Length: 158
Image (cartoon, rainbow, N blue to C red; front, side):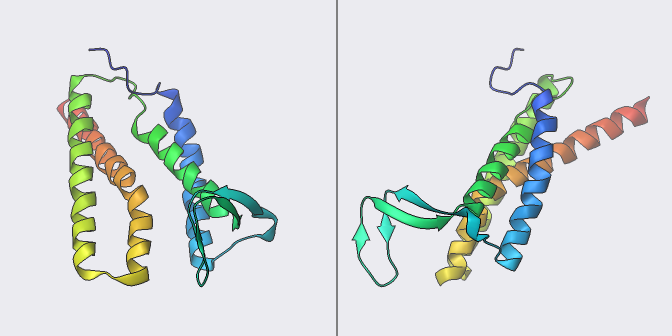
């Protein structure tokens, strides 16, 4: 079966090489609220809501781009890790991939539904921020867990 929607296998290594340092940098940035001043830029924005001011549709804002760069790197590298072919991609691997994706969507939206019920105000914004990344993370964790189980059972049979 020809699978056209997956990246070549070599992209997985590139994805891991970007994902791990990006995730560590993201956590450090989050925990220590690190925003180096040399990354402050005037950027165009579509919707601007000032804390105690006007709301504009278009304009320029001053923003530190570290969070943006880290977020973009995490998303791109997670996509590369999650959707790169395995060395031996067959129908069973495709089945595991599909089941893992469905499972990740269910878990992700289950957590989001629960969050709607028990988390409020600014804390909910944090949940939504993390929710952007968790579906890919849940998929990666479950997919590789299932692949490792498959490899262990194959080694056991030999």
